[in-house]
Length: 163
Image (cartoon, rainbow, N blue to C red):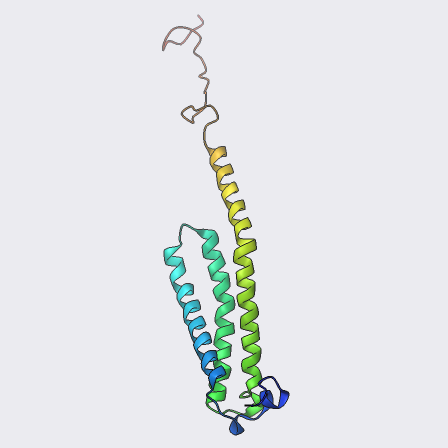
């Protein structure tokens, strides 16, 4: 086996190379599974996470990134499988580029979930507590507040008349 990272190996025309190998099988498995999971979460998350808006927005943003990356990666593999050599679409370099992009995307998602999402969730929870505090009565009353009724200076239920 030649060096899988040499320029000649990456840019060899598809008609002169084997299509199936350990790297291509791993590529199809990872990208196929990634595309399936991204599509599944894209369509299933809104049904299951109606009450958790931050998590829903996070999943929707992630799937809107993952679907094109995994989909285009599989598209370039299909070009290679069909041995389409126009414009160099069947070269191995495209598979390596999309594997690199997918790896970067996964690393970013991991960073986002570990570092950024907890801060956003804490801020959203603090805002919800603040809103709950603002909406409840200040002194444990019924929430209506003290209202002053006009014209009630005298006895019960009677209006004072000036004659």
